[in-house]
Amino acid sequence: SVVQSNLASGATIDHVRIQNRADDHVGVNKVTVNLDRDASYNHNSFDLGGALTRNDVVTKIAGKGAAVNLNGLYLATGTQHIDNHTSILHLVGPSTSEEEYRGILAGNSQCVFNGKVIVSPGADGTDSRQSNHNLLLSDRAEIDTKPELEIYADDVKCAHGATVGQLDETALFYLRTRGLGLDEARRIITRAFAAGTLSSLAVTECQDHLAEVLDQRLANLI
Image (cartoon, rainbow, N blue to C red; front, side):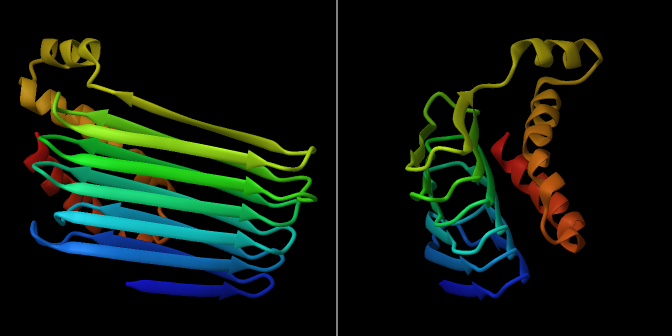
């Protein structure tokens, strides 16, 4: 699937993409967005199903005051493979971009996050933040994460980072001392990690639907 958008001055697009395909589905998706002055693009990506999924999101900020917000959540188990490749190009400044992707991996699944932010010469005033956080529920699950910054301007504020970890044993112990079983405690902590993406949902009308789908999917992972 291909989605191409050109945002005129002051325009806004709120885009939520939900992929919950059959276990044997293979999908390749590309989103390209060009932003003019004071335009805003807010994107949420949820990958829950499919055997092999690749997503490319390419955004170009060509007007001052424009803003890009990219948020993603991927849940994988079995032998699922999910790739997310994002690119945010700041051609002018001041402009802003914020990106946060989260992943929960179980079984023998493998996921890839490759996020790149490029601040072009002359794009002074750029403010960009990028992060990728991952929770591994299995010793066999694998995440390859590579957040990138390329900065060719001087007056900018940019930060990026990535985390990979397992469930907090102290938090699990605390919940179990309150009478919860191990699976229920694991589910509560994992859901809290995933629910962080819903707080920045671009289209709030689908929040209840997504919460229900996430609960069903997490039940299969744990």
